[in-house]
Length: 142
Image (tube, rainbow, N blue to C red; front, side, top):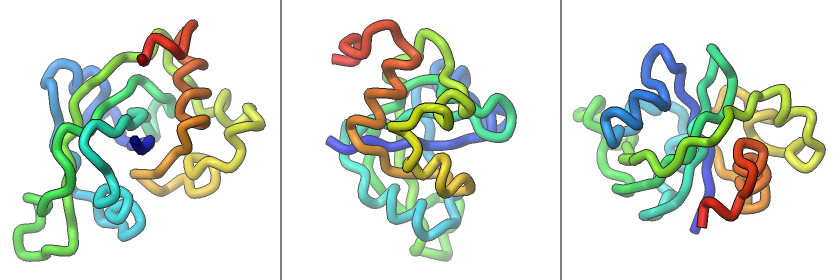
C-alpha cells in the first residue's frame, strides 16, 4: 500500500464534488514528477485530498479505483496519464496547511518542500499523522 497527497483547487473540483460524483478522472497533469507519481499508484492506495489555493487544507481521503491509463485530455501525446479516484472518507475536520507546517514530524513532506507539485508521495507515518489531525481516532481508517 502506498500513500499520496493530491491537490486541487476547490473552485475547479472540490472534495464535495468527489463525494457527490462518486469518482473523478485525475487528468490534465502536465508535470513529469507528478505524472511519475500517478504511474506509481496501485489499486486501493490512499490519497489525501487537499484543497489548494483557496482553503489550503486536507479535506478527506480518496482511494485509487483505477490505476494509470492514457490521459484522455491529451489523446495525441502518450506521455501523460490519468488515475481514477473514489472518495473513501471525509475527515472530521479539515487539516490546514499552517497546522501541517507547524508539525515537526511533517517538516519534510513535499507539500511544504515542493509546494507546486500536485501529486506527491507520503510515508505511512505522514499519512497517519495528518489523518489523526483530522479525526479523533486514526484507527477509524481501518
